[in-house]
Length: 252
Image (cartoon, rainbow, N blue to C red):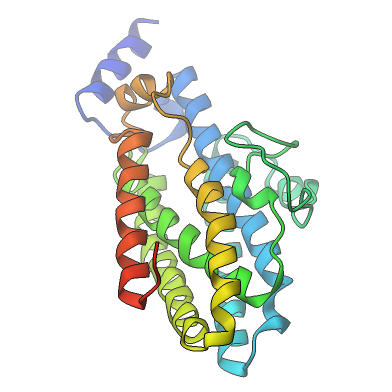
């Protein structure tokens, strides 16, 4: 207990850990929860976009969608390997959950966890068509970038290093989405579908930042696993998405 308290004080002062052996029990639990949420979201997100590849209107769009699918799987695998260092059954993990499974389109599940995996709730909703996929990718890609910028400085060094390596690729996924949305908005006939998708996905992506005033935040901050509140991250996301939509000429 004395050693554990010493390590907790070290973390509270900005210290870093580099191996599972030094991690206190609760720290391990919170870190595993964080990693599981990321891995499950990447695997579920990849599965959802895989179904949209052949909906792309041209070869360039299909290549972009394929790249997103491939890299999300790679990101999930990278973090899953770190979970393996903590004892996770990595072989069973990747095939255990039905990653393509989705709820009804009109479901409204907010921020409450659903199902048997730890994916963010936004990945429980189905994507309907190419415009829907592109719009969702712009909104969620921006959210993922903000969340990874937060996680790139966490106290568990091997994971922080992976998040820093993953961040530029996830940022590029969002950029690919913006390029696609620009093309869709340029066509007058496509604008109603874009607006409908924005109305659908905006509140669902916003919910992925979690509840305001989360009771777990203080503990996560003490462990060096969080630095900014859910409210702060959500506010940044709203500002950035407003900027993107304004630049494209789309009214928020």
